Length: 87
Image (cartoon, rainbow, N blue to C red; front, side, top):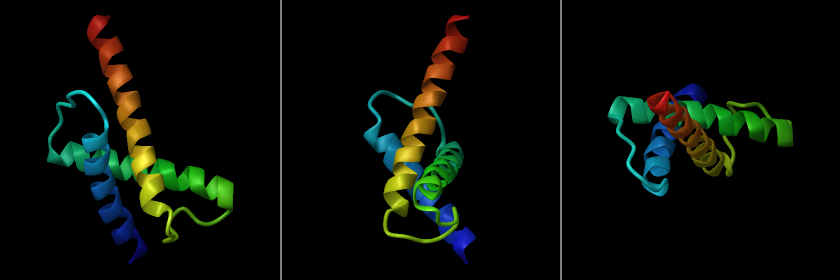
């Protein structure tokens, strides 16, 4: 059950990250969901390093960590996309 919540929180976090991040991100719904899932994993991994809890554990700061992780992944994708377009 925790993996299903992990995926659902990741999808929500991806949509929130795209809403928070300024500028235009040209990606569809599926890519936004994958971005959120990757960001949720990044946020959960960093949170587990700090707290010592498992990555898939449900805690109150999970959504915040997922959104912050999604913002980080979105920022990295934006920087990589810009450098690749100018090369």
